[in-house]
Length: 359
Image (cartoon, rainbow, N blue to C red; front, side, top):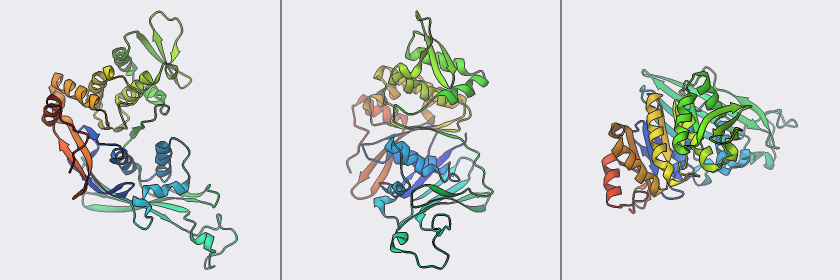
């Protein structure tokens, strides 16, 4: 399995410092609102997109559910302190080590400042105009370390004036990110790939667990349609409500073997509790069959109870699950507390709160 053994985060959004060890195939993050769950997913995504200088702004747009300006990149810096770089480190299962830092700075560019020349003293407005995001990263493998830089530069209107990709670097992993926004996400790309590999029927069978009336699943003009018993016409999934769309997005991304790593934010969004156990079983089964690593966030107590039920019925999945509660503690700062499947079972049987640990 490709993917992460661990991750260490410093000065990213609300995270001053956090280290999480011993990732497995399916990893679940718990916590209160603003506990850093989504930020951890974003850091995992950044680690697999180090060479893409557009990715940080894309992540901000996903989080804000709207257009994000270049200036909004400052929100990725802890306490909005632009002098302290966000840094992320990780070790992968192939023993490769990665390190990424983000830097917002001013770089002279004749295109964005046509009236200036190198060596000329900038105006006060120019001095405060941060026009460049640099993604500085290192990859260490077999005791050999390579350094790279990708960057994006904008003019004073916020339009991209220069983009630099990391020369000589090629990312081998493919990551799918499913945000908590129910209006976002289109399963069409995953379903097209599954259709080419003759794997779409497996997704159709999973959809029948969600709604037994579903008979078929089709992709037409990049739109997913389902057939229902008793209805002659195919129906667009986007018109069938949030639950079916969310369920299909997750199952299709889990089934697509091209996705090495799957990130799911707030898995419970849009779903009735009756779908939780079937969805957990689908995620574990499909992650295993496609050799995929999955990271999930939730703040729903019901999802944990149904995860526990599924694990009791399918004990083979127990060793490949990790559960982490993220907590801002008074004495130690931000911490990740890991529970095994036995800890989850005991908490569910005794109605112990797992989403927050008061320390």
